[in-house]
Image (cartoon, rainbow, N blue to C red):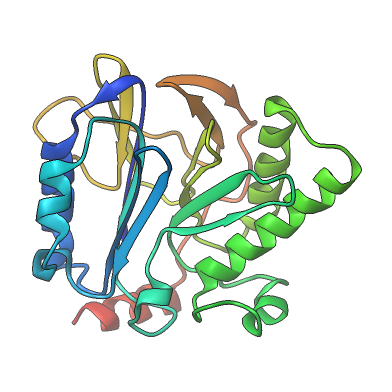
Amino acid sequence: MCELLGFTSARNTDISDYLRTFFSHSNKNPHGWGMMYETDRREILKEPVSAEASSFLSDVIDYMPPQKALLAHIRYATVGTVNQRNCHPFTGSDISGREWTLIHNGTILNSKHNHRYSAIQSGDTDSERFFLSLLDNMNEHIARNVPNERERFEIVNKFIVENAPRNKLNLMIYDGELLYVHKNLKNTLCFKRLEDGLIFSTKPLDDGVWIPFPMAQVIAYNNGQEVHRGDRHKGTFIPTLEYITAMDAMYI
């Protein structure tokens, strides 16, 4: 399966060692890598090769300035071909000008949005269709009234909760202020407390204390602190025998 990494902190922090460990997992997720980080603007880098085979990722990590917010992704292709357009993160702006970025680990098996966005998306992944649907949903609210921080959280929380049933939605979303985190499959996301922030990862990245992230609950963070928490929902993803068989076949 794909792996996710997210980071949020109150101060600029060097997390290069975590990134190197994270990207070393690309031997089992060889179909692409991507990263969002910030300089004087939001930077998105992605490449449809194994992170270990990248000609420039190591230099990027070496020279990257300390960060307050970051997302990273390594891909195992389950839906969509292997090309740059299908690598995460996906990013785009709403009609108010706010930029949104998403990384996703999972498969969207039940969605009313798939056909609507298949004709306009850049690639051919379910993750991108989900992201486009989220942006449209946000734009519908903005057209009536630009939401404040709490209202943005409620909109995102409701959208994820409505789409969670029968779908594997391990994801992280960054809107320039809030980092939204969600998982609905057991044993697939954890976090570690750092001095001034939190790092989230599909798998532990060192021998420190990593805490399982809560199940089926959207939580938002700002500057390394939890600021909003949604109610626990019932959309836990329970893999069917057919799903497990299909995933096993992909990894053989």
